[in-house]
Length: 292
Length: 135
Image (cartoon, rainbow over all chains, first blue to last red; front, side, top):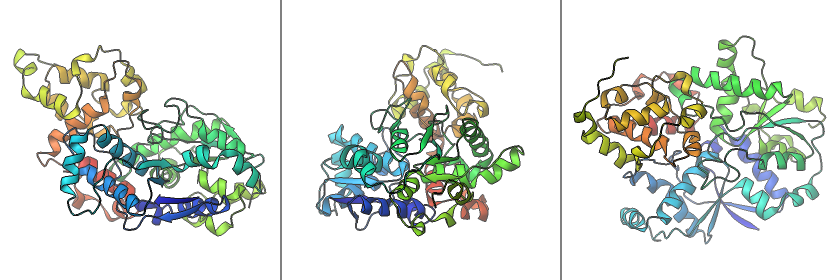
């Protein structure tokens, strides 16, 4: 299977561990990934104001790039890119007049966008097209005795119309974690916002959320917390430094992308996991469980 | 806090502007409070999400535009998911931010951010922060 792939800005630097572990996992599953040519930043947030059409141009240009590579489907990894691309797409599909206006603005594009590209998140691809059974068959190292708290955050599941799973109680990551032989633990903060971009000018708010989210996972016995968004990853991992300052009793816990544990289970080499990008080193706990 | 209500405020074009920018019918709200009950940011807010809707219905423009809450909301959409009347509260809060941002009243001043604030965070954080908090 060949697949168009939109990485987005952070997958090429801070979240290289997310990208490398995904690409290795997909190649183990027999998927050929083709990065879109000339992709641009999606804008990271979907424009909510009704009259703000100009900010839909950036995500939609990436869907035109998808068509240019003779594909009608594009996969993303980052939850924010997924949300922005999919919502912009749904917005113009349900409002042809705004699509006309946006196409007029993009008059230099060779292709007129018609709302005919499908935006997929990697998790949907794994569940609906590759199928979890295939992952189970290809697995070489079951993640025995690893207790995983799966954190969804906001943008994979909200709003409901574009979410990949139930809006209040998503379970797709728990199902995947079980397939990988690990032990998913349930915790009430799995869809609670990490305060996102407040991390730039109000990091103390992020530290407070990080504290509540991670201590909740720890109280249920989690060894690691998995994420699917580079901003959640930054807030839950790097901001543990500020969390520790604000809450001296706080104990660190490693944060991993769900694709890193997938890559371990599929036998990807350690250099695709890029543990050097983590603030809290996941190696000790993974070594203890005999996984690396 | 003392709040003055008047017919003049209720009829202020501000109310229509909020409805137009958000695409929401403010009068649909019956103050059940589910939005505020589920909001992860309420501990930092001075006006709670259900109160924001009430204030907007009543045209309390100054109170809303000077509130901390509109900059604390991170558009996580939990309120929208739980509103039994289908009101998108996050969009109403976006409309309030937009009213200020469109007058070039930026919440974050890029030149005031320190090197560590700019340098340590990933691009996804900077881009989204500036998209939400600057004009």
